[in-house]
Length: 392
Image 1 (cartoon, rainbow, N blue to C red):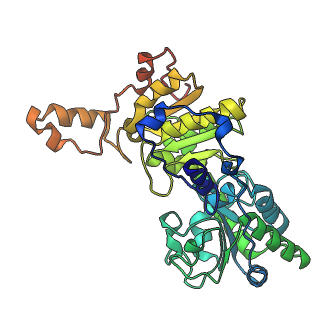
Image 2: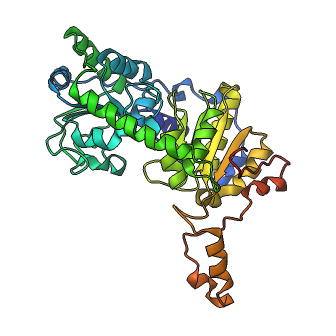
Image 3: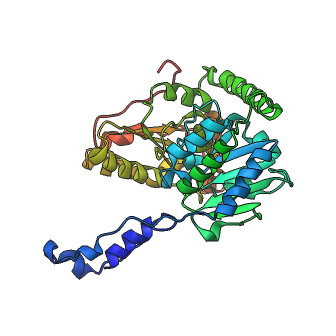
């Protein structure tokens, strides 16, 4: 009964984790499967339908907007609403952004994605359609100066507790996201609504996207050693299959990697999440690889780690080897948390210190650039590769 309740709670309402604590004697005992009542099998979660008047208000706001913006959150991925959300974007030509784990609900490669113009899009939008995304620190709480003080928010969320959080929404809709978006799309199609690409708002966003892409392309073409993040991620992305699962954590590694490593399928990205919890990457990669083994054996798992993040749980590679999980790990070493020191400066600082003073003068956010994280795998298997020059 308790197991059934835990499974039900993870699926009903807003999806999430449940915690079960088993006494030791239960863990060591057995039981007959035939004695378990069918009642305790989890049933599909009920659908929550929106208030029709709220849908009408949302449609009115979208059609009247001068500078609309859609934000796709991880709630859209959890709701498996990708087909409906893609229909919304495709049929209306609305610009959209995705939150980190909302990436792939609509492909990052879509021409409607204005991620390179994120700051401009958020600051100047007059109507924001929030699809399963929370106005927390990731979205700057929906407040000025990151948003226009006059921006109207259309919020769709499964959880009533999330409605009107941080800012008051112009219309707050508690609903299964897929159902609500289907009804909004139907309402917009009845009005033959399409947001023209010739609109001034689209022109502003496209110019900003082009400017930022040129800046990134210039940094990605820099072949000097040590390699910068943009060069690393640009070249790494060329070798990633479209449907791979990307696990990413770190400071710059996660933040910059999010903009360079595209997700074109939903639920194919795992990162440090809302709380920025470091050390979860290898464990997430193990869970993803076990899922792929049983359900999608052709899908690859790529774990992209900053050196500081990898340090929290790097020995999980032993579990990967023990369970024969085909995970590719990339450690981007910038010798610190966010940023370290140049190797020569780091060495000189430590060489000039008395032994007892090393802990005092070595910045706690600096790590060693000479650490061979790849050699950790030599403890377990001969599956290592070190890349420093651009050609590698």
